Picture 1 (cartoon, rainbow, N blue to C red):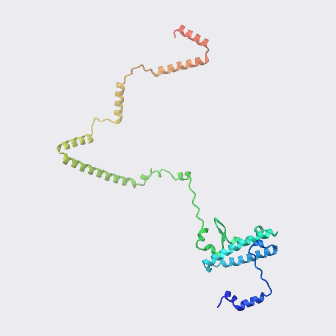
Picture 2: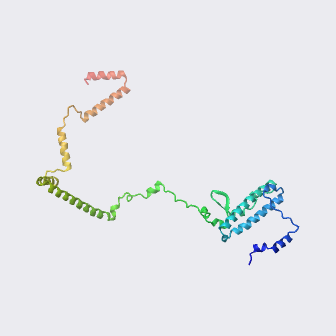
Picture 3: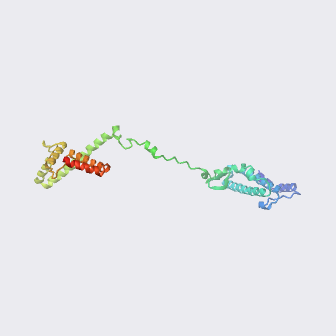
Length: 286
């Protein structure tokens, strides 16, 4: 069965349409809005454009039209929207209402603009086309960065490793590894000692025995650190000789008191009073 579009193109259908339009002159919409100088006609062309936009917006909702058809319809809708804007400007110039401010914007709200590409809108199934869907996907907001005070809240003794031994696992492992390292070091020392003994002979053997004796021998006359320190202090005290007269603490205090008195006298006493005090000291023999 032929489709409606094919039926409309048959000779009979065209003949019938010509009979209905006989005597009528079909007026075409001007290409430029500035060519129209009558307000009623300008409003008529605006309504015609709105009707065409409504039909195409209804068609583009069908996702089964195919990618290319949907893209063409979306381009035509955007072109008609721009043309509608030109006619609205022309209507305002002719003294009509300002449709940009008071007119309904339902058709404009159905479209969605891509961020950063103002003016071109996507309608219906065009918003789900490959390459367009990604443009509308917003990137997730990154989590806010923690401040230094928030980071310091989680820092405690465990962060610095002071509680590593509390779990009872680390210490046995360290002891086992320590024994292994000591055993390896002893084996290495024995191997080196055997090699030196085999290469050096008796003389090296005697020197090795002397070294072992000096290293591992425990003497009774060894003193503790405190006793050795006291002995060294005693030796220093005996060996120190003073070549000048060292004043005692009492003499230093008396000298400071005399110096303070002299400063106060020079500051507050007059010259005559100071002379009298000097005479009194001379008479008293001070």
